[in-house]
Length: 93
Length: 457
Image (cartoon, rainbow over all chains, first blue to last red):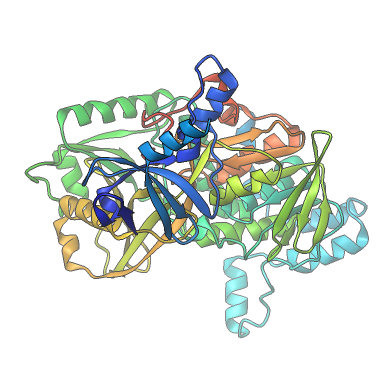
């Protein structure tokens, strides 16, 4: 499986560390909202198909990336930097 | 000690059971009974092997039926793997429920019970885990007599190696935790390990072998035969095994489970147990549940067949690597999961390299062997690395998942506890810690101590 890093180009996935579901992990609720915080820490959609996930390019540019990948066949559909995704989200809200 | 009964019970033969059923007469409707008894009389023994051997094998009957689904069952188990079939078996055997279906989308045993490294052991550390896995090991010890099926249970011993003083402390602690729960553990010094496995790299410059923790009762089991044995045992007790029947929906009304939509029509049931391993999240989502689970791939490997070389199961302590030898002669081994979410039953090359590097560091002679095959299975990785056998917020819906990559050894106890949970609508004390809501209440069972990061367990 190879991931097209926006800075470094296409690299084997052993250069990266994967953290998990980007949509779940990038929406951190306030710690006072117990039910939401439980969802954030523990519950995952775990879909079979397209999945947006956080990868860290440890062996390259050391940027956090949001990779859209198919969990049924490992096809990488798109790669964005997490910074851009977060900025877009802030701009939209 | 209520659970001891079922271990000893196993001497009751299937033929005797069939006679008992016949003498009871009205216990089951006539039509149903004749259907079951047509197969139930086939008892496997030395005598049956001799008889069939001399008569050309014409008398063997199928090991289980291929029934049409009924409109309604008392309980439905979704998933015809080791855990699902064991659950149905113990529901029938221990709890007297016989109007049960196991619904499987493919053929039985086509998931993880057919693609694991076959290791059984109970050398755990934490209180919630040790009694459960020890119960499982005790059930393994009586399994073949219980289900009248040769599962090739081989208690050849499991050795966990340690490579430093702090490693030794860790394993001594684990051994003491086991002894505290009544599970025998033995400390091996360097020479002790050498007496079992002289071929290991004891003087590895970075990770020399200082000793090991031995559990003699651990070992391996012929994995497919576990699924087949439980399937046959369950079938003989009246369980309908519905293969090639995919669950496409779970119907819930007013917070209660009422049945499952399948590729062969709607089947009603007030009790539905999910034992879907890597697909747990997908099936639970049909009932609107989100689980603390991610699906990951674990790869395993088999070498070419060689003469007996390694007599125990040996686990490397400085990386993640475990190896044993199958009865066909191939070395069977594996390591870590790949680490990313996936439902594809295949992994990537860097994990293969990682596993082989660990293997070579532990046992340099491995490099002389050629690898025969490699495969991947989908693991239901839970958020604390421990399983879930539990009620759910939906009445009559039960989940059995989160086995990570250690589900095979748990198969008998998982089925035994899940059956208890479904039949009584409450967990047994052995699986009381494996609640679904432990993540919300903070009662995690984190053997590895890595937190809510499934790919680190």
